[in-house]
Amino acid sequence: MAVKITDICINCDACLDECPTESIVDNDENPTGEDTYYVNPETCTECIGDNDSPACADACPTEGCIVWDARSGDHIREGMTEGQPVVED
Ligand code: SF4
Ligand code: SF4
Image 1: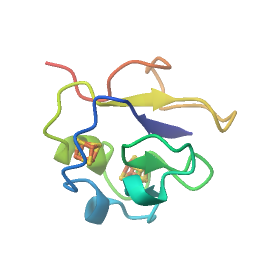
Image 2 (image 1 turned 90 degrees about the vertical axis):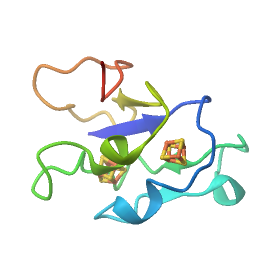
Image 3 (image 1 turned 30 degrees about the vertical axis):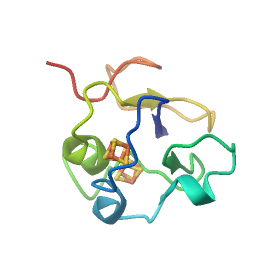
C-alpha cells in the first residue's frame, strides 16, 4: 500500500516532516531523477495505524498532487482507486 507524489509537486517541503514512516525524500534524493519529492512505496503505510488519512496529502497545498499508488503490489485503502488523488475537492 502506498501513495505517490506526481509531477505537479512544487517541492514546498510541507509533507516531509508529516510522514510517520519517513517514507518521503526530497527532489535531491528522488531515485527516479524527477525534480519532485518522492514516496518510497515499500515503506509507505498510507498512514494506517497512525492517521485516519495520509498525512502527507493532508499537508500538501497542491491540489491533486498525491495519488493512491499500487506499485508495491499491496492493496490500497478500501474503496480507493489507483491513480485517484488522495484529497479531492
Ligand atoms: S501516506 Fe503516510 S506513510 Fe505514506 S508517505 Fe504519506 S505520510 Fe508517509
Ligand atoms: S507537500 Fe505536496 S507539493 Fe509540497 S513537496 Fe510534498 S508533495 Fe510536493
